[in-house]
Amino acid sequence: MKKPILQVRNLAVSFKKNAKYTKALKEVSFDLYENEILGIIGESGSGKTTIAKAVMRLLSSKGQIVFENKQINKDNVNFLKDIKKAISEEESAKFALIRLTKYLIKETDTKINEEKLERYINDIALFLYSCHTTLKVLSSNIDYFKINIDVSSFQNLILDSLSELSKIIPLYKNVETFKKTNPLLLQIISNISSSLISFSSIKLLLKQKDNFKKPTFEKNKKHHLLKKDLQIIMQDPSTSLNERMKVNDIIAEGLINFKKQILPKNKNNKDTKKLIHNYVKNTLSFVGLSENVLNKYPFELSGGQKQRVSIARGVIIQPKLLVADEPISSLDVTIRAQILNILKQIKEKSKLSILFISHDLSTIRYFCDRVIVVYKGNIVEIASSDELYKNPIHPYTKKLLSSTCIKDKDCKIFNEKETKYDDSAQKYIFFPRELIEFSPNHFVFCNKDEYQKWK
Image (cartoon, rainbow, N blue to C red):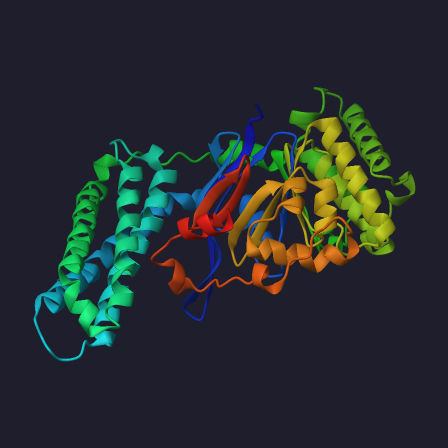
């Protein structure tokens, strides 16, 4: 059984603009296994590059990023902020619940005030949904607690409460139906009240600092070594290569920084320089470049040559994980195939794991073992490349495939009904989504109703 080299759990990234936060990633979770190529695909602005930068620790993030069983993102230490937010929303939910109960008990012949009812229900629903997301954070950080918290049973209680709350909405549209079902509504509210009481008990535990362990986070020297194991190939080599450095210096820089970990021990500086030069020449030869480029500057090279230099710089220090952010998007078709073949050879030779980002689904199918489909900051589907191509389930995946099917005779073209997808946030407050396994190793982001509909 393959071991995961990278584990990402509930990864969230937000960007601040004019005192407002925009969520670029929402609760992203996936595993990357040893000697595997995992593809990430989606439209522009969906969050592909944000995932890559968060994994490389170039962006601050919430959630857990675990590399070789060690957490590497420092910002996860502040996960308690999310819990405090849910606690602050609890009071407004309690008041809304009291108002809603009083409104239902009160016997009146007048028309139902839909605005009031809708406001009460939405306040409670938003709190319960916040509880649901908070519990996800708790479950991914359960190692930080000295006490046992039964997160799973409480999660089920929250989901049941949201489901029951959604039953009230169609009833209050009709006065007669609403009056007849009053006892049922009060029972539903009683169940929701028990959810609030359960959350209050967890809240008391979370408020006590003694119940937490100090988060462990590797620092200094160990983090320096982590840079060797994690490398990235940027989308545009023209901006990622230093124009003032020669190709030889660009490629050798990483080797000089990590020579103790890579090169054999040698006290003679002249021998070390020769060894570094040989390493650089061999790596250049492997990516298909001659020694003639060693004394050239990046602006003297073509686009394909620059990208090969970027690959050489990334692989020369023998990383365990390589993040390739659209490395072939700016290249000609013939050069693309050469770059992909080089990456495959490197993977087979050094047992490298690759996180490969691309717009091109045909490239993903040829090159990757498994594929992640990203849409609006969420992972909507995960499957092997062949399985995803032959049996897509999520409407957005079907839409992506249909856009490339003209070039592929084996691919099925889906109609508008099959690719139509309502992603409004209000719809999923009462019925939260999660990654559900439809078939072995084939996961789709949906709720229980969608699962029954799409299966």
